[in-house]
Length: 411
Image 1 (cartoon, one colour):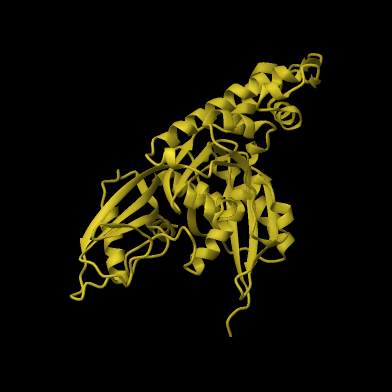
Image 2 (tube, one colour):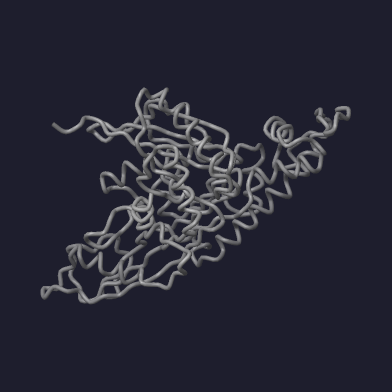
C-alpha cells in the first residue's frame, strides 16, 4: 500500500544562520510544516565553507532541533547553495525532429536541451541547474511544452547555472559529515522564488532579491521563466561590520543595534531619537542619534541595490518587468528598506514571505525562512516531477546533477 505522506527536508546553509525545515505532504498534495530548526552559522563566509568542522556542528544543531520538533529522524536533505562563485548564462540548442510524421516526442525535447547544454565549461566548474525557458517550433516561439506538436525544427532556450566544484563539494562534505545524504543542491534564489512569488508575477516579470547575511541573491523572471540569476557578495553582515567600525562597538552589539534601532532610510528617522552604544576596551557607553546610525546603513544598502539593479539591467527583459521587485531574506526586515529599493529600482517593491503551507506555517511566515520553505516545496515538486525547477536531463541520466553522484562514490 502506498505511503499516505511523504516527508521532505530543506537545509538552508547561510552565512549567518542555518535553518532546517521539515515538511510532509499528504496524498492530496497538501504540504504542512512539522519541524523547524535554527542554529547560528559558523564556518561560512559569503555562502562558502571556510571551516568544515564548525559548519558540521552548526548543521547538526539545526537538524537536531527540527528532528525534536517533528518527532522523526532525518536521513537526507535538499540543500541550498549560493556564494559569489555562482555564474549563470542563457544558451540555445537546435535539432531536427526525428520522427517521419514530424511529431515532437519527449526524446526530442531531451535531445534539444542536451544540444543547448553543449557549451564550454571550465574544469573547475559544474552545472547545477538546467532550466528550459521556452521552446521554438519552426519559428513559432513562446512554447512551454512542445511534446505532441508537429514540426521539423525544434529549438530550446535554456538557463544554465554553474558553480565552483570545490565549493559544492565542501557543502556536500559538511552535510555528509553530519550523517545526512544530499538528495540535491538547489540554487537558493530559485528556492526562495518558489516560496514567495506568485505565478502572475513570474508571467508579468519580477525581480527577486534575497538579501541574506553574506550575499544578496538576484533572480529575474519574465513570461513565467527564469531569465537571469546572479549573486552579489554583500549582505546584512556588511551592514553590521559598517556599524561596528563606525561606532567602535563589538560585532555582536552592532548586530543587536542594527536589529533594534536600524533603518535603511535616514529620512524616515526622527532627529531627536537617541540610543546607547557599548564601546570596546571597557570604555564608557555613549549616546548617539538614530539618524547617525541610519546614515551608516543607508549607503551600504543603496550600494547593494545599485549592484542588483545593474545585474537586472544586463537583461533585455529589464524594461518589461511589470511585477516590480520582491525583497526577502533576513536583511529585508530592516525598516525603510522597501522605500529605499523603490528609489533605486524605480519600481514597486513588496516584502516576500513564504506561503501556501499548512501546519506550523505561522512560525515560518518570515522572510528569513523563504529559502528553507522553498527547498521543501522544490523537493516536493521534483519528487512529483511537477515543480517549477526540475532539471532537464537526457534519458538514463541521474535526476541529481552529476557532482552528487561523483561525490557520493568517493566518500
